[in-house]
Length: 276
Image (cartoon, rainbow, N blue to C red):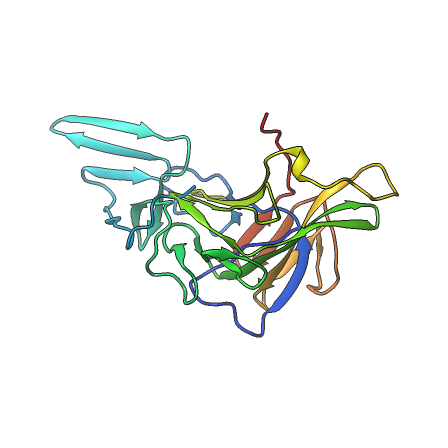
């Protein structure tokens, strides 16, 4: 199960519904041609906390021409083109601006301690991670809230609790925020801010940090991250390619799609990597 993403720097209205789901999250955007203005189709690591971003806007043309993943600089009669394999710039008010992935401590929503307030999407986070401290993610006209709840084993209809989310203090370094021991000894929760992706990881440092599996039915046991998401009342959520009523508890192994107007976020299914 899964969920998690949002929009502008405004707290989610109290009329918005809260949903329980389970999974991992990621945001991505459809590829675009050079020099096109980014669309609102977003298929949704940390620097030391500074007072605020210093990122002057550059006009198109002249000696500072830019595109989403390229830039041209000229000196005298010689020009150099640089092409990047990632999104380096975004458009704001018709001007290209460098994407700054760093978290800062100023300009954040009330009650949040560090944030990214520019770029294609914005994120506001808290120094402590627990069920009562949601992070928010804003893109276009979508504004979402995300609160992790618990980590469990699941097989068929049986579930075994590993740990509920703990009151874990953050460790912030450039564009990465880590909450150590978020689900008990040796199980951390980590968030990466990337140009087009907001990535969440559950880090299990050793297999021994997981309890023995006591589920007696089924042979395919999975790890479930259950979380609560606050969604705008006008947002439409698609689970298994069908509209979700935002109330029925549901599970999926496919993408969860959240749309509002022309804005679209996609939450892909989670996957596991062996650190060894």
